[in-house]
Image (cartoon, rainbow, N blue to C red; front, side, top):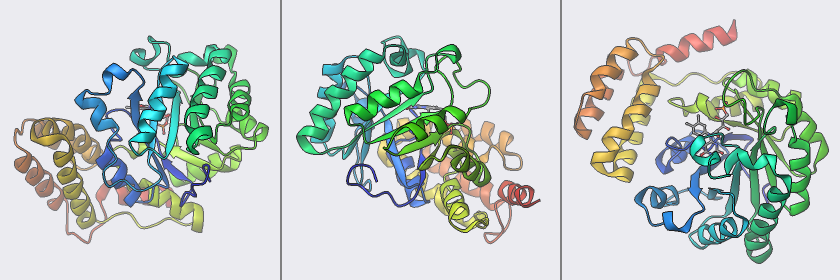
Length: 342
Ligand SMILES: Cc1cc2nc3c(=O)[nH]c(=O)nc-3n(C[C@H](O)[C@H](O)[C@H](O)COP(=O)(O)O)c2cc1C
């Protein structure tokens, strides 16, 4: 439960700027993600009218609860931004204190805030007052284990958040200084889970059903959140959810299913971004889809030179069709399943 919202399972897709746009969130949810958070929306009102921001706060056709992530370092501005998004249909507001990106941290936002617990408290109080107290919209917090390894203050931040009335915590098992280096650690997530009564979501390096089960058992968390491992593999959510529910693997997707999924994804993607931007931003998604497939690198180079949406979609379909019959398992997936079963 997040406030009054009951989520269908405990496998969530992580917010990823430039990746988890509306078409991709819808796809991940259709393929089993129990919760999806939008890409980060800037808290600066001057940016709300830009095309990029408008796309990031668009929820047309998205299933409830529609969750918008906000980021910034100014409590009043964040509260205003939260209210603005609630007025436009957001049903949960997620605050980003997890992003180490320079663009975000330079403006004293994202994970840079973790070093200033008093400011974290002021921000959470202001946003909870603006949307939870006044209109019943839950506020969730996504954060890292601390500014750096010598200052892992996730326990204090979690206590501040719980006191402020935050409804759920998502914790990435790295510090801000770690960036994405090394391995995520789960001990701090376990300690946070043991210290609060609100739901806790574990995040970091979860890339297989077994890893998800291990992290849930290790941390006692209520759910897992998957980011990078879902790039080009949106079916990972139903695989993890199936494994957590039944203890056995779900069959890998067939080539025919992936052809259909990718065609639908590209269609939605072009419609959302328009032909010019859609063609270009689709390239990275296609690159992820084919990365582990036979001859994927060579196909990606050829595909990147295509300058027309229809031709791009047709090339992807032809490439997938050449991998085998529609009923065959997707090659990389079949190998991955065998390795997991071994
Ligand atoms: C390309 C990219 C963009 C990201 N953008 C955001 C973001 O906008 N907001 C956020 O809270 N985290 C963002 N993250 C962090 C992820 O949500 C997640 O915490 C991190 O990738 C660790 O999970 P993973 O190991 O499953 O990828 C981003 C990560 C990546 C790789």
